[in-house]
Image (tube, rainbow, N blue to C red; front, side, top):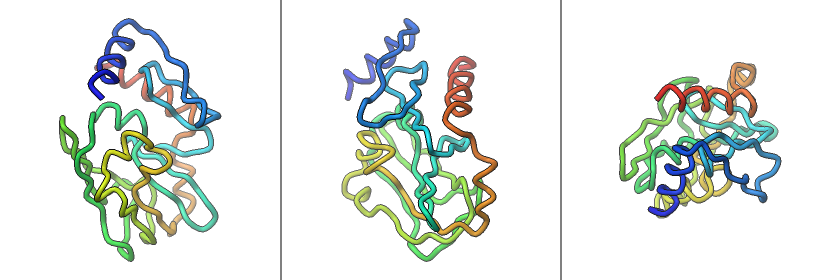
Length: 165
C-alpha cells in the first residue's frame, strides 16, 4: 500500500499517466495514476458512483475517492429497510488519514448493504466498483440519475478539482 501511494504521488507530481486497469473496461484514466472511472456509471460531485441495474441502483465510493482517503480501516453502513435522500449522508468511511461521510447520490429505500465491508473494509481500496460497493437502493425518484455526471464529466471534474489543490 505504501508503495502504491508513493507511486501515485510521484506520478501525479511528474504529471505521468498510467495504463488503466484492463479488467474494468471500458475506462477513462484520470490524471492521477491508478484512478479509474468506469463508463456506464453515474457519479456525484461528492465522489460516489451509481450503477443502475433494473429496479435497483448500487452505490459506492469512487476509485478517485478511495485513492485520496488512503487505506480504509472501518466502514459505517446503514441498516436495510431504511431510506436515503439525495445529497444526504448514509454512512462513513474511516481511513488511516481521515474519516469521511458518504452521501447518497439518489433517494430511495435501502434494500441491501454490503456486509462484507464490516470484516474487510479494504475491499473499498482493492475493488471500489465491484466487491467494495456499499449499499443497494430502490430509487424513489429515478429522474435524480439525470442530475449525476457521466464518466467523461466526472473525469474532467476530478482533474479540475485536483489541479485546484
